[in-house]
Amino acid sequence: MLLERLVLSANKFQGIIPGEIVAYRNLTLTANSNKFGGPVPGGITKHLKNLDLSYNSLSGLIPLDLLSPLNSNLQTVDLYNNLLQGSIPTPLSPELVGLRLENNKLNGSIPPELGSCSNLALLNLAQKGLTGALPPQLGNLTKLQVLKLQSNNLAGGIPTEFTGLTSLSVLNISWNALNGSIPTTVSNLQKLINMNIQRNNLSGSIPNTIASMSSLLELQLGDNFLSSEIPTMPTSLQITLNLSSNLFEGPIPNHLSMLTGLEILDLSNNKFSGQIPSFLADQLVALTQLILSNNHLSGVSPHFNT
Image (cartoon, rainbow, N blue to C red; front, side, top):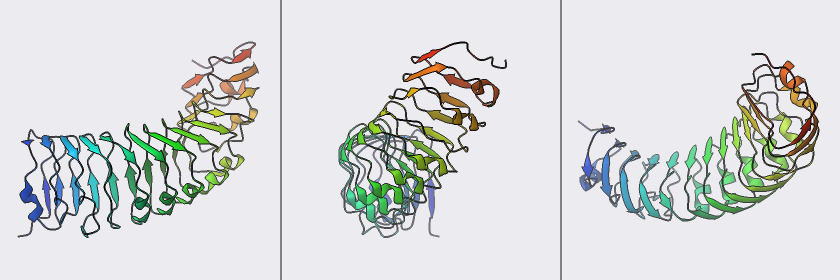
């Protein structure tokens, strides 16, 4: 009998990962949420199909052959929440569908070679130590659905090539040091549900084309240097619209009254002036949080239903 799946998750296994696992072919190994330590064994993915060693205490460098093109059966690798160090090894298997390395101690840059992993649907490299620019080559990943690169030290602009990620539903590049403007072609991301680019150094205006992003439920643009007029927002927004800690000024725009399904609106720490418009109480009936602190607003607050 050929073992196809071995699940050891949520136990109290400790020590090193046994090297004998290398001998199993087309195996899905799930050993997350244990107390395994030491290095990831070299050659472990030679015949594996899926590997999940997340939520352990694995340390050292990621083996150079872990993501190798020679691992022709390998589809997913999940090393989330370990103590791994060093850079992301290359070359990379073009068969990869999911790669999750979040919450380790990796450093170096994001390998441009990831742009050749044409089947990749999930890429999560959220860390605290990755540096350099966003590789334009990632824009080749037309099957990518989730891209999470938050909480790193990435710099430079948002490549216009990223707007070619037409299957993307989640984009999180927040808490970095990205600069420049939001690409006007961002509206090409018509399947995007959650866009989080807060806490960067982005400037300029929000593209008017954003109104056509009819799948968008959450938009996080806070803690940047955005200015000019706030454009019409997609009426699909339901979870959050966060424009806090930017350089917006003037009256709160009336077109926000169309966001009747929105639950959280954060306009704090800007330079908005004039009266608080009554539509915030009368028409945004789904609001559970309205944050207007640290602006230049005046007049009487509208009456909200209790």
